[in-house]
Image (cartoon, rainbow, N blue to C red; front, side):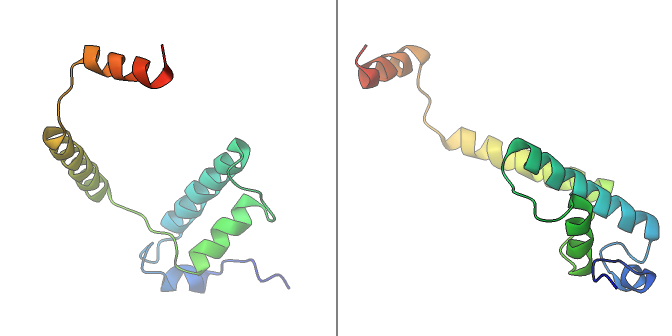
Length: 107
């Protein structure tokens, strides 16, 4: 029998999906799509099907799902961090940047 299966007991025991079969399927589907996209872009070489890899990751508790509020909070924190980093960065005018680039390439 194949070891690459997810049983209901695995789903019910998972804290990430809170025992919801719907959440478990959504988590694995999103991960499989991500893996497939990475393989198509040439970043990964697949030895198994993306769905099999996603199911194995789920069983190993390597997948998480965020609520809408948690996702928005993370996004807002990233935006604030970027804005803070940009505020600290020195401001250069585009003419001096262009001159520096031309000097670097010998133009």
